[in-house]
Image (cartoon, rainbow, N blue to C red; front, side, top):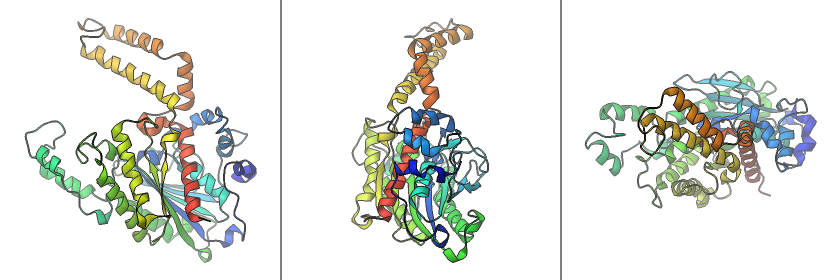
Length: 414
């Protein structure tokens, strides 16, 4: 079902539709979405029902799918999605709908959403112009290496790494430094270059993705959304000094370089730029997560970016009731580890338990820890791990909508 039948519902959530000339006569609005696995999006479509359980978000679900239960297909918003793994990059194209989240095959519906879905739904309803989303995202990519912008310079070892890597062999230390350095040089900026090259390729022939596009109408790169960070946040070598203020200051510097460089390389010097601030762990996340969030916000406060860069918090969208269950799952996994390692404080301390006995013990432990109601709630709302925002469609839907609203505010400051 297409979006036009539900614009009234959208008006409850979104800005009024722009008035003026027809969409066909207006330039194509282009938005670039980039990042790592959370920009890919790991929320399965099966968790949509959970959105409707909350009266505050039930109207959003009504925009995301029709009465027939099928996901909305946008009227005048299209997407080109470059993704892949192991060098197997590929492109998925079409009218925006659900299924443009993480994909094992770039050309096939992956049954998941990222923030692109409700970002596009919001833009589809709020803008009179046709919209093109160009999304480039790969799992496990860092800003310090993979997306490192050109003006940040080459990746260089810090003092901590020099002391560790050139000292005695140990955990996490490269076994072959020459090979490691060569791979680092090869990977530095690789995802950044792929992103820029793909945007340029798509815009060289927009009609390949947007069948209704006419060259006379032209196109405009109207905004950029960045959702990344986990690989940098957990990298204790590139960012040492755990628990200390300023630990991630270099990330803030790299991100400022990224903003300047994509504006230059895409020929859009004042392009609005939205930073999706890491929200994994929720509002009460640990110290280092909070410190990383401060680094992510920092570029938006720079004088040169005032009014054109915004930092959108995603922690408020973290599903804490699902996270409680996830922590119980962690306890079950930990118990399984203890049983297999004959931990002296646990049931298999003497190693006498058979595999069947360990399995039975673990099943009983899980049943006592996680109630049937919690099992049902988890199945309804979650579909992935904590570092992927629990694979919760409600979380990704709220993020995409918030990114779009922040973008629209910068596009139309009055």
